[in-house]
Length: 139
Image (cartoon, rainbow, N blue to C red):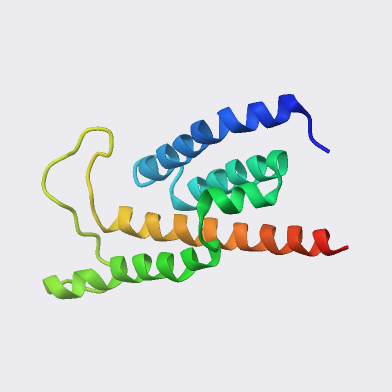
């Protein structure tokens, strides 16, 4: 049983927490943060929303099984590792676009790798949470 206060707070806080998770993702290759922490924060936002509004609402919100994010994230991370080979650089060498972009900073393979880790963490944690929730609904 959840309260009206929890439902209301979760509804308003979820977008803010998701935005904070993206902030942590983007600052990760310069300061503490990155794909892992950003992914955990995003998962926490979705789990709190799901706890307050039942798991069915969160499934309607994301519209796909979160397990799909795991191979997608591994693909992004593998692409970040292999991409330097196309520029006659050793495997896993950091490549950067020229120039700096507002808010994001420099864009390179480190960011691509962090995005892959972000997707893997969100996909894995939500898959586990959904499995546990579905098992508890059966009992």
